[in-house]
Length: 430
Image 1 (cartoon, one colour):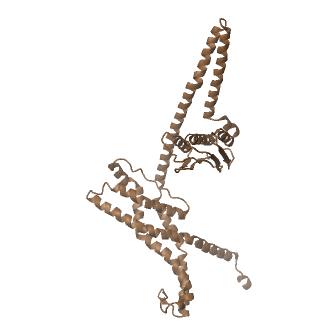
Image 2 (cartoon, rainbow, N blue to C red):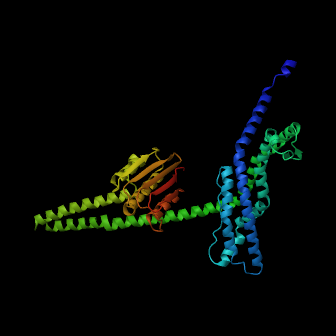
Image 3 (cartoon, rainbow, N blue to C red):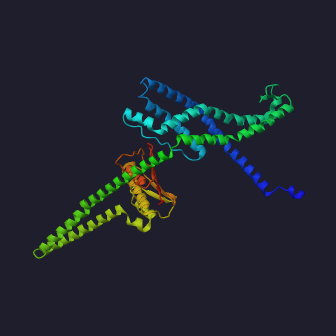
């Protein structure tokens, strides 16, 4: 029994392994946490200045002078708060979204927004809290690891410095015992150092709690986004119906009417002038052929048959082949997507190629289809003059509306001199 009691149990091994993992995890997170708190020390100083400025504006509001400046003062501090969100999002591994009510309209409306938007109150609460605690926590986050390293190194350098100049925590290193005592202090200091990742995470969580959107605000923001995209989708649908009606009225319908008229005249001339009647029949045939071609073009603009039969890659390949500018296609993900997503991607690429042909002056275009089963990504790049801008009724605005109607996103990069890169992401979930 004594021998058995001397053998470590599996529970002891598990506890030891857990302790090792705990220490390794804290050490792995330590550099990132120290950097986070060090940066927080800087933003704490900026918070003090921002809070002082807000206090000055508030004092001026008491005499009426600062009232017009109050909305602008809230706007001025938002970049600092945005930096705090990015800092906390960097540590937590997830971005923190800012949700503010739009501060627009006249002075009265903007003042009402300042006082009724709860995000502004939480911003001021964080400025006050960070101004008071941020510098202290940041200094400790940097000083504790340096102190632990110094305590470990005291036995290695105490003899090389003037006597009495090495003192830590009230212990002066004047001999080997005192030097080793300084080294031993590194143990409790190291225990405190291991708490830095916890402190950093607490601070980041407080940032998310105060500066992140509340559940109600996030829901309201999402509802507003969906309302706007639904309205844009309805507008785009209405514009598409009007275009189809116009194409049918001005094209195929007019040609079919001409066919009817030509056939009627041919019937009247059939006995009196068979040659003229035959000529009118041939013209009617030609006109009917043109009308059929226009009908096919209209149908293709609604939903290309090749898209339904052979998929998005084949349909885009046909677009690339018809492009006046040499166009290459790269398909990184070849699975089929929902019909609405494939149609949106097809028309996005068609519009992008049309815009590039008209305005870019490019010599080459590349199209990349990628993403996974849950997300289809489209990238259209040209080597043209760049400087493309999104206007309200332009093709790029139409591309954005198509993407947002499916809860997707569009990004445009077009510096002067090029290249122009259009990226569209379309969710494929139900």
